[in-house]
Image (cartoon, rainbow, N blue to C red; front, top):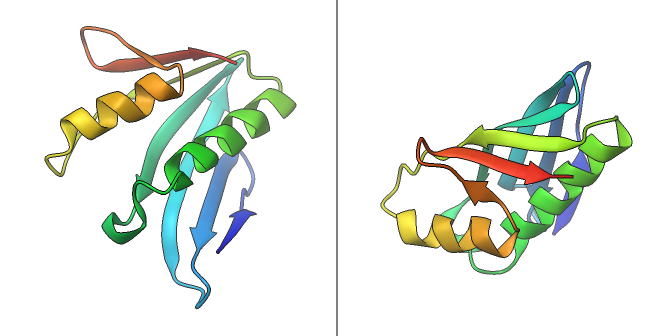
Length: 107
């Protein structure tokens, strides 16, 4: 497996590929002011529960910090019936979710 920063312009993006070069995880977003906004983070089902999503998140947050971000935001949007898994995922990362589903994390 390899993890690559494929950011271009103002869009920050990190991809994870398996040994055959297939995309198995990604995270992307942008900085507005001093806030890093996550557009989407996803890991294919067969690669979940192996720490890949957490590693993508940590690298994305580090990239934001390197570019002047002091906070992170996004929107909690479960789409595959794994709501509880996502709650645990964000909790482990120290991400707060408010009553509207908005994500918050200091960087």
